[in-house]
Structure formats: structure tokens, C-alpha cells
Amino acid sequence: MVDGNSSVPFATFKETTKKDVFRVKLGSGESTTGYYENGNLVIEIPKGNDEYSKEVFSPVK
Image (cartoon, rainbow, N blue to C red; front, side, top):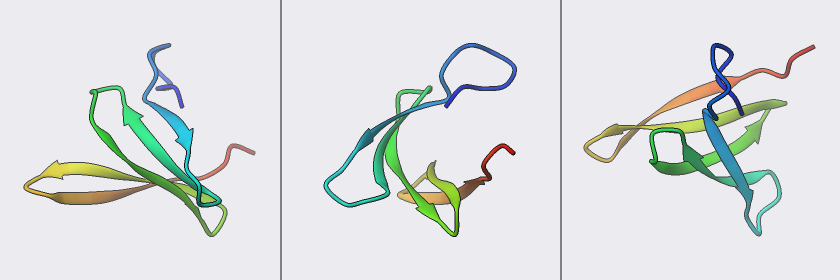
């Protein structure tokens, strides 16, 4: 996934053994989890203190 304002990757994805669940490495170097939910890609963005926010990305049509 690439930031729309740059050619620098926002995140890179690696498959896991579970269908539609991914290991995600953010451009900041942080590692997290991504998955498909209701046709959208969800990335759990680390907020610190072991808390995460849910970022939902809809497919481009």
C-alpha cells in the first residue's frame, strides 16, 4: 500500500496461515495486523500504551 502523496510505502503486507489476515509493517517501521472485513482492508494502527486504532480502507473502484 502506497501513500497517495508519495511513492514511499505506507505499509507492506505478508500473508499468514489464516486466510485474509496479514502481518503488516508500516512505513514508520512498526509491525501490526491487517485483515479483510466486509470487503474492506482493516489495519490496526498502534497508538502507544498497547492500544490500537482501526483504520478502514475501502477498495478503489
